[in-house]
Each structure stands twice: as structure tokens, then as C-alpha cells.
Image (cartoon, rainbow, N blue to C red; front, top):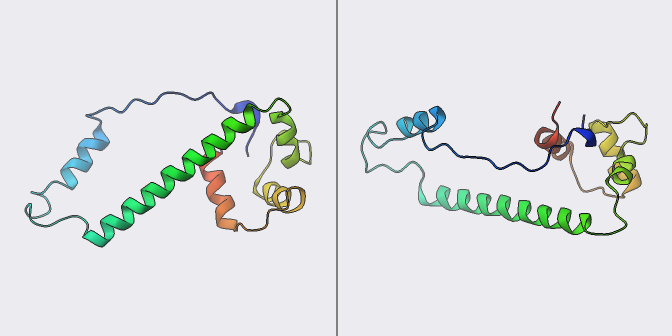
Length: 127
């Protein structure tokens, strides 16, 4: 369940250049392990598809962040009022069914799937 009181401020993330995960990945995908340096991990089409997907993710994240900043700067915006639009049962949290109902009934948004809601919760739910 998503609860607005448990959201933490943005934190800076450090990338450790020699983390165990990074070492494991570099060993798994090294040219020697793949049978020589001549074979590429991805062909050209796959590389382009990956690049396009990553660009789309970056653009979507940038647009979402811009919208959040713009909304937060509005003098009449109140995060608790926005939360109450979804938490219509007044329990201090909401689940996937509550979000679906709020999007459809309160906001009038219909063009999403159950998978969209699942992915949203997977990304933002901290419980």
C-alpha cells in the first residue's frame, strides 16, 4: 500500500565502481567468456531497440519529474488532498483496487491496464 507519510526525500545514490554485482557482470560478459572478442552481445537491431527503450524511459521519467515540480509549485496544490482522492475509504493508505477506482471514477482516466497498475505499485510501494 502507498502511504504519503512514508515517502522519503530524494537521496543521492553513489555508484560503486567495484561492487560485487559489477564485477560479476563484467566477468559474465567479458570477451574471453563469450568465446572471443569478435562476437557481439547484441546485434545491431537489438542495440537500436535497447537504445530506443532506454531513451523512452529517460524521457518519461523526465516528463514525470517536470510535472511533479510544476504541480508542487502551484500555490493551491496540497498533497494530502491529492492523496484523499485515491484513499476514499479514509484508511491512510490505498491498494491497487483503490487506485483503479479512483483513476476511473474520480479522475476519468480509462486508458490503463491492470499491468500498468501493478508496475506502478512495484515501482513506488515501500511495503
